[in-house]
Length: 226
Image 1 (cartoon, rainbow, N blue to C red):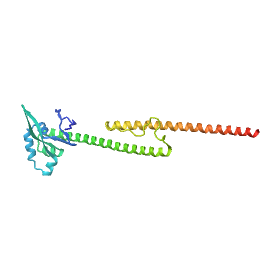
Image 2: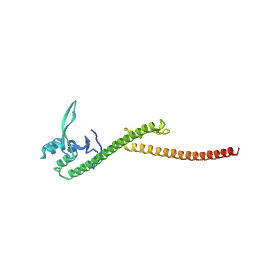
Image 3: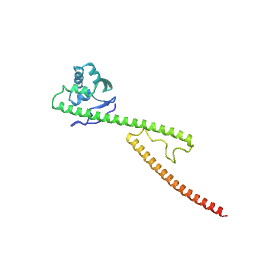
Image 4: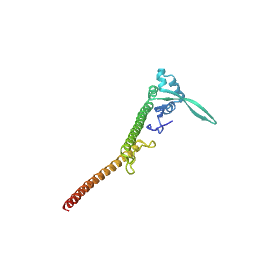
């Protein structure tokens, strides 16, 4: 089970909610502990809630936990509760202590769900970036293949410049973006260098053509004299 500590209740240091199957939930054990009730009482309250079967199925999931008594380990029933399930159950809890913990639970659900959405959004963005990078790299490879058929085997990457954008599954989105932007920056600088070199060579070529043309005219004029 994956658990994230997103909210510490006042005077408490224990987690109130967890993530189970990508859904924020709490357990009947935690509800009993934080509201100062016996677990069997919380189970009885859940089992006697006047809610529809559909609501119960969606918001209360029966599970089991193990507890060791001496050398004997036994399984006992418990429930996972969604936000709605907890809210429905906690409506019947009264008093200042109950109010304080209801507020703590609501905040915990809010914070956990916000983090879960953020995590899911980041993962989606990473997968989207991966898809775009792979598509771009495929187009680059195809373009190089076509270019080499037309212009020869030397068409394509220059020097140590890689022909594809980098992407690594084992690093996070931010690191992939940094690697990608660094690669693009270096490639841009290299391309500017090659363009400037081509411009300089073009100027040298034009100057050489002028020298050859002038030399040719001088040769031709001397030939006519003789």
